[in-house]
Image (tube, rainbow, N blue to C red; front, side, top):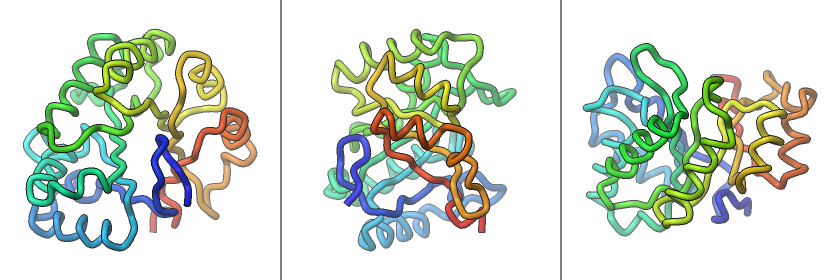
Amino acid sequence: MPHVIGKEVGPVGYGLMGFTWRPQPTPTDQAIAALKAALESGLTLWNGAEFYGTPECNSMTLLKAYFTKYPHDADKVTLVVKGGMDLDPLAPNSSPEGTRRSLDNIIGGLGGLKKLDGYAPARRDPKTPLEVTCGIIQREYIDTGKLGALYLSECSAETIHEAAKHATIGAAEVEFSMFSPDILSNGIAKACAEHNIPILAYSPLGRG
């Protein structure tokens, strides 16, 4: 079985975006039932984002509702969540202040019901050195036990190599499918292999 963030997971993950980042979010009871069915089918890696929805209905509110109902499932799930985005307008913010605000919001949103296994800045912030962002996450969240690991999202091969100098990278979330095989030729898959970084392939069916 594959391992992500140091935890054994199934070969297929479960993305949370479709539940809340839409004009009419899925009713909470239906979403919880879907998550329960996914977990019982072996989909133990769940992937959400702080910005998947509104402040009132997003990945964190759904996850809190789920783990409130099923607290014993917390240890069965490997949870990775993206953040580090300003919402209006939607733009990367991995400054020290932005990173702390995002992580504190995500961790607080879980209400102590589930530890955050992995956190990724959703996009690289060109205004903040990667070393600064990685340092904040490592010292203030991973080393203190608040967070399991740092992972990367929508990253280039250059970013992977640079980030690996400053932190242990738990995974890289990038698009990969028969319709989008670019990571095999642009250096991303090679960089992940060099640093022993698992790939989280989103849209594996080419967006349906």
